[in-house]
Image 1 (cartoon, rainbow, N blue to C red):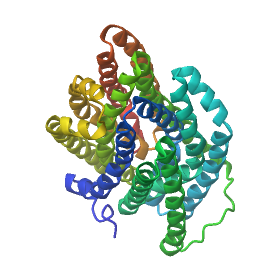
Image 2 (image 1 turned 180 degrees about the vertical axis):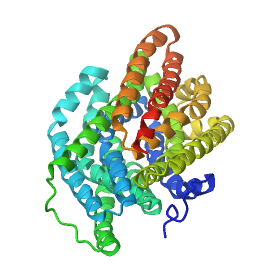
Image 3 (image 1 turned 45 degrees about the vertical axis):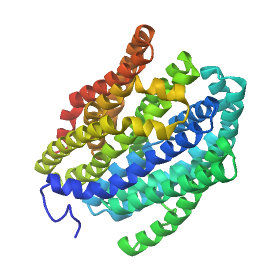
Image 4 (image 1 turned 180 degrees about the horizontal axis):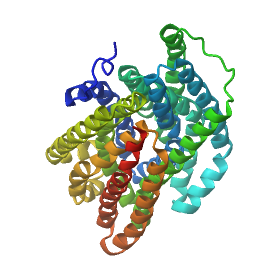
Length: 441
């Protein structure tokens, strides 16, 4: 019997037990970015790190914009699981697979437009632009595999199999790190090596887990997945509404982080490179804290499926508390190990020197941002996507307006102050809409 089915209570201990495997998988995700940053940051020239920063930021924005393929899957699957509607779980999975392939095809044929947008938006040097285009020419073909992986992660989170979703991400990340390191360090492929590592790691991981998932579905639910009777109008409209809301929400949040890259590029390539390094600290903390949010998604969806208000209130309270405590511990560790990590990320002295001037922001962000991360998980599990969308739109627009003013007068410190305020905006707007979830009970 599942851990969550065995009790109507969702204690801190149970949330931590569910989150432990997700911790390891979520640490693996930013490790890929950290390794890529380290590989490029130690090539002796800023252009490699600047090119990788811009190219990966744009690709991350594009791919994360379709994060609804994971988040939408979690909410629907978790609630269907609470109702023991296994056929609907499988149909949701297959519908999203088809949608992922359509989206991937559109992104691939849009590669020339992506390149043109980067050239106009960032105005990189000729050498940097060549490196950016070399990266994109390869990385864009990993999109089909990456989107399908999103869906499988959402499926396993939705049925509370966090160990399997974690294993998937860990394998993807390890393959990415190993392959990218080999291509860069052994074959000296530089930016191309990083892109090639991501491409191969994504397709290998997708193939392994598609095979595993098919066998799991047949064994667990006693149903053979078939692409039949998927086009049910009511189900498609529900999926479309959820996905559009999450798409808009994710598009705005990824643009907010791309905005950091953009503002840094306007100050200078050295600051762009430094902000890329510092963002690794923010991303590492975010993915670590998201372990609680991810495990909470399935729990919230399950509680709503069972219409248990007491369980819902308990998981909200306990998950937010342990997320804040963990965030404080992360900041404490950053305080003591910041210098050592910077020396690993880059051997360029000017980048090290500039980085030390901004370490305070890296310390402050985790305890403040943990609230919006956890609230995201609660809203995703409840499939309360319209409120998520509205909260994010308001937060990002406020953040952009504030950042323009602060950057003008405070320079790079203004960028980081704005990012901190953005996290606060997200928490306040989500807190305002939290009461709407209670209407489901």
